[in-house]
Amino acid sequence: MMTRLPHALALSLFLSLPGIQAVAQNSIPSLPASPPVAVQARPPLKVPATPDMALPPLPATPDQTGIPAAPVTSLPPSRYPGPVTGPEPARLPAEQSTLVYAPGAAPLPAGTDAVLADIVARLKARPTERLELRAHATGTAERPTDGRRTALLRVRSLRDYLVKQGIDPLRLLVFADGSPLDAAAGSPPPDRVDLVIRP
Image 1: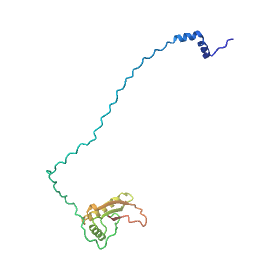
Image 2 (image 1 turned 180 degrees about the horizontal axis):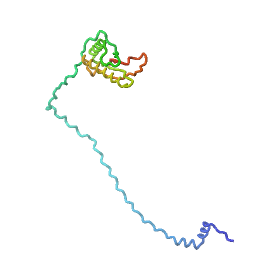
Image 3 (image 1 turned 180 degrees about the vertical axis):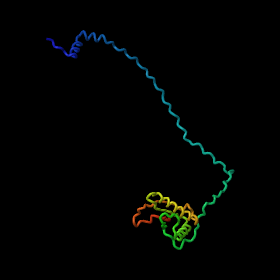
């Protein structure tokens, strides 16, 4: 009984026969020889000329003898009079003073004329110093923003008073803030204006 040979083995035996090899060799045509390719020579690169690094001469200074001089102008007068240098007060105020207000009150509290007079005299004697006005006020539980509004009214009233006394408003720095209703014991009064002198 004949056994079957694998396909690859049968194909290799078939091609190994002498007649099959001759037919296979005669059936494959030979490839034609490729013609030689002419390579064109590249033209040489052009070398740029050396740049001229010499700077041209500077132009001569124009004649300005015929230009008229600028007219002399003076600055406009200041809107507010300048600080007046004079003697300092007999009792020089501290670097920070406090004006205590009653709750809800906006006008200046009573008994502050002497303190403000000393501060005005110091600011006039020392024109380089500035004054910070830091106002604090309490509102209500229903409308807590009323505290800042009241503080703003107080500090604006105090600022207008100092300007009427001859202090330049540019030297007055204004701040307004509300105070909490539940202030801790021993803390500063919630309704007050702190006067802080700055260099």
